[in-house]
Image (cartoon, rainbow, N blue to C red):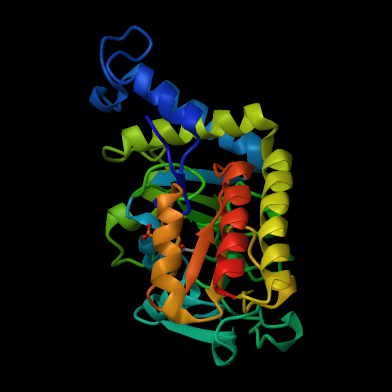
Length: 360
Ligand code: PMP
């Protein structure tokens, strides 16, 4: 069996240890004679799995006790609607900072429900930076400020978090959660789709300060009301049981590696190696302002776009897949999440060097 180096932006590579354990436990989980997939979500076995996953996530991110952790469905995108439905009361406004495709989508969705203003945007700079905090036009009466702390397509990551005073800060952390420490207490609500650093697609994790829960608009479908989920430990209906189990295995894996500090060390090492090489190559280029570059998603272009197809073909022949950039920006993108071993980046850089020498 040969595993590839998978640079997909998501669904993305998972730790091999996790996949092996899941495979071993597939037919008979801990002597129950059944797969986790076949278990009742009301039974003690599954409740234990879900509780342990939440405990481990709380420990990894040091989530304060006045925050609820919800394991929901609908991916990151459903949060673009759930956030305004739950937090944006009629007559209030919210501020959105747009730094790429995902925060733009979040703002557009929120505008369906209410007064979602764009407080700052880097669209004019083709999403190559986080607008300086001093330029943000924040409204002190806003219901919340929404940001996307890592833009998966454009490769723009907040290295510092903005100060929003009494206005709750809401963050889409889908593509970099668990890769760096985060002071949860500075946020009103954090959400993250699972398919990058957590587990299978479809699952989304919401970490919400308790006082923000319970104010959904009256027309909100009950399945989209945070309170309905919070009051039922994320199980008012059948949750994504198998995805929660895999997420739990990933949390344990992170703990075994040394927790968030280790994830961050690895992310810094991987991304530095790649950016240093790109910047020094004279052949490849990353357009993002260095201070705002993502440690998780590294978009880059070749000196001549006519070489793109050949580059991708050569990469695949060497066991490196999913390096094609997003269709909206073109070029290449290497997504290097927690589960990407250093050897993957070393192999990529070596190939990029050889390719540049041959074609440059
Ligand atoms: N936010 C970010 C930052 C993302 O990268 C993505 C998906 N790549 C989404 C939201 C949407 O997630 P989903 O496809 O799970 O709805």
